[in-house]
Image (cartoon, rainbow, N blue to C red):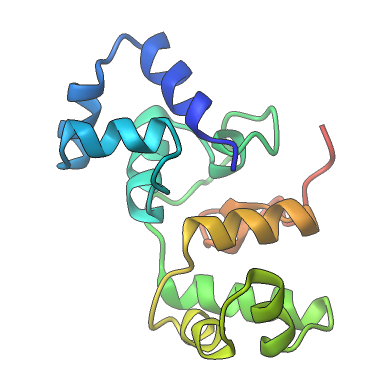
Length: 153
């Protein structure tokens, strides 16, 4: 993925230490350090907290766009809305749950759990879908209604 360098650059630009960011996330410093090095994938909830704190979109954090943030961005992620948007995206692209599961190397029951809002999509799956289909992570998560699809940088 492509967010570790951004985590470091943004943190350093505003003058925060890893310890300070770890406290914001209520996690250990060593865990946060693993996120920055991308040795461990940062969960959506922590990434959302940081995007809100830094006033950045997921799309900017993932280097999908040069736009820092969108108008009318929502701070919270609603699993039901995120699930509905994932399902609509899948259908628009004529993918079955099985097709999408194969693309992400998971099971269709995992996709069904995301689409029903039982669980929130993982960071790695969100990133993979958005990168392949050029769709906004913020849109899929329900943080914004526009843009839906991203222009290439």
